[in-house]
Image 1: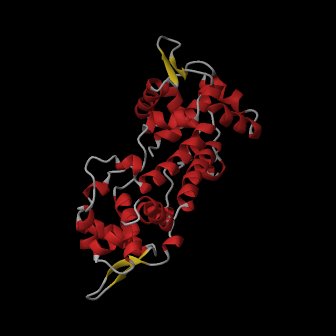
Image 2: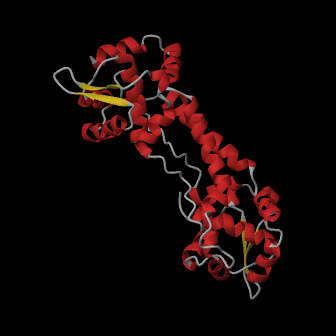
Length: 153
Length: 153
């Protein structure tokens, strides 16, 4: 998984606390990240409808919707895409009694088992939102939203 | 995930039905796979204790233990290793109030959430064994073990 996933997850949490647009250069400086590369990842989040890019002197990136409606899965798939980690190539079709027309990705027992594991992973990431992460951090460090807002403003 | 994962999962199922050593070239021909590359993957399974390599004229690869005690996770990690897909680089340490000494991979809320999803994936793969896959295939195609045994012998 790309290291960008960690960057944008933390950045979404920070944007949730700030509540208004922040330029990508400023967001990158916060964690000493390469600005051009972070900007590219943030553009992917805009295309996925997680962030909005606002132009003008007070512009930058901001959350496109309520952090309670942005799951970790939304953010991860914005960067990594929706392709499963295990891609069934249907090798059964090349087997001695393989059917070249069969959809083994859908029917093969092994493909099904691997897909089930992947679904468990997705389900767990879909269950948790950016708002949940914010709440967990705030329980541990109540001053975090305010000092982040100050630093990034 | 490497395409080798699909190859070796199917090969373990076939070896479970054959019940004695089969040469890697023969196993590769079964699905028209590149023999040298399949052989490399099978060696990884030997190192992981999933297969045994038997030398001599009746040699080849065979399951190292009961297929009911070989989980899909055993096979997948033999090929892919045990590193998690999400690797926390601890970017919080570079943040404005980061602690260079802290173990953020263990304590960060985001790292914990990502690890939880990975555990759900592992748990699902650990729950299913090669014997389970064999049984599912046999329910659907009762002749599969016998014709596979004949073809590979």
